[in-house]
Amino acid sequence: MNPKNHTKTAAAALFLGAALLLSGCADTTTPAQSPATTSADTGGGYEAPAPSASDTAMAAADLKTAQTSLGTIVVDGKGMSLYYFTKDTKDTTTSACTGECLAAWPIAVATGDTPVVEGVTGEVGTIDSPDGSKQLTLNGMPLYYFAKDTKPGDVLGQGVNDVWYVASPAGEMIK
Image (tube, rainbow, N blue to C red; front, side, top):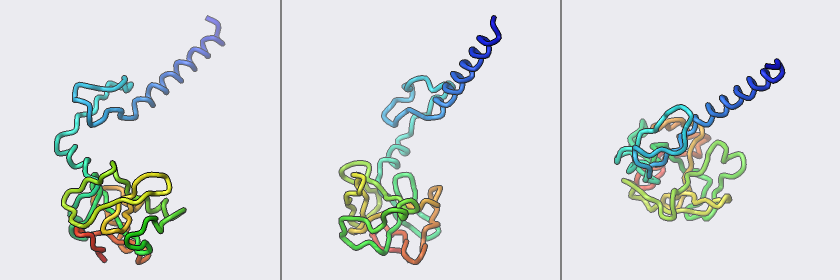
């Protein structure tokens, strides 16, 4: 074999191997799939376990409650803390957090046209966000995540700049 062809063949094999490896990093199964159903080959024989009924129910809620170091607060379906921004106005149709603010405080988005709640007793609704999604509101106030909260139960955004606060299940600001 010509050494130049061998080098090209080895490079092509390396590229193909890397592409196959990377394609296996994403889990392409969805909760609607049965445990025996998988999508296209994920490149490593990995088959994601089917979510249990309780996992599906928990993920289905847009808003629910969770116990944290601050007491019982409102979180999203995955347990991530949600915050009010005191510069928003009750019953607003637009968020006061724009531009760079949104990088640190992403909006909480409804998964469907009608938000699903568990344990939240305040009035839940939505407003249109600039990107066309539906931002969740509680008692007329938009809800946000804090980018530095990385796992359920984190409440690192509480009290930041004296304008960001978690919400109680009744929709009251917890200071």
